Image 1: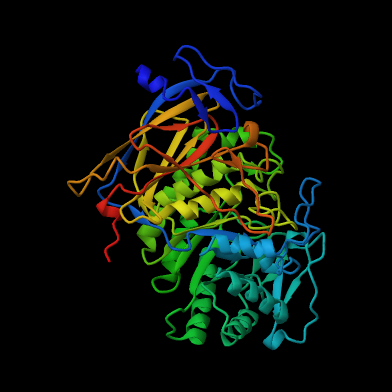
Image 2: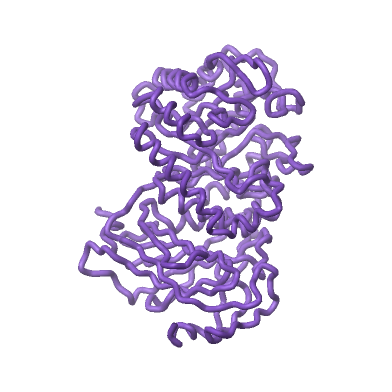
Length: 540
């Protein structure tokens, strides 16, 4: 390692503390040391290879997605009740910060669903005279709650919010309606679609835009609460397709049909696709809670373990290959991903440390041909992007916002050379034709990486200008406290403005000839606006 690299700068301001550089053998003392940082901090060179000849995938415009759930305030896990008024039936739809937060992520896909969608009926049509009440605890019932009800006045209020914010909606329908419970965890019979059909028709006739209708939640293979066999599920999905075709006809903006929103088992998904056949399912969805239970004391260690996080790559690949082979007409979606199940863990899944998992997931999903990735949740539980009731953003909200602002839809292959704790993902830049955007994640607690980008496969003789400064967005936790619910951007605290708006995320400009310096336990988005990549050039 040359001295020019080791002495990149005598003082680097990245994490809210000042790091004094030294030689390779010596490490600097760090004032106000965090318990998450190692005793010795070293500098190290690293390289990221990016093949720019062709893009490998294009995510959908609505790739970034978040969920809204039906859980009432009485939903508790491990003695903690974290949902409060986050239910779709009770949340404050006129809170200005909620509205501004959704607008800032435009175009955001919102998936409305969760376990209790399969206990929900719609007070409309042939069910208009049924008594309508909220979910209440019921010990011996599936999911531990009684049946609940969505009345049409609330449905119109919800859609007023979606229309004001430009959100795209995927609605999860009750797939257990009409089935008979024969024993604990076992339901038999076919889906009774009459209530769903009345609801879909009301929605269509009310000119409410729906991007997708989804059938069921976590009822496939290793289902939660109960399981439906794949052939019966295929029959029910075909019924939903017939309803959609009958109501929407040949509309250009006809909603997609999506299923099963469950946990992935290749044989079950294969059978579903083979049994439905072409022109039935438009997207196949699975859920991810790869960190384990929300009560797990080792969540932070899992999040900061590259080896542990990489295990999910196998599931992404298997899902991609299953859809490609047995249902090439369908997209692959992540319909729900909260990291840790049973509402997550406070000061982990709602803290800065979660962004290492979340952004790695977004990068991994996009590089494995995933069209949409839905985060559980926008509001509610301990894994939400926004804090329950106040709607103040948690760190992952700002991470999502930067992804939306910087990373374009076209994905490029990126490889980190020989460094396990440094992750890299590359896309065409969002707002610069021909530009390059790179996400760098430093999971090391002891290494300041000095990163060089090695671009190959140029389709043009000109490789772009090195004179144009690159743009950098460095995310870090205040005082490197990974359990903080606050976040720094380039050393400055991000917070909503006094008038309740989401702050503007501004980069710093850096000489493109210099390597990218990324501090321990931090994340950086880097944009080369003048890369002039033909694969990323928009032809007018």
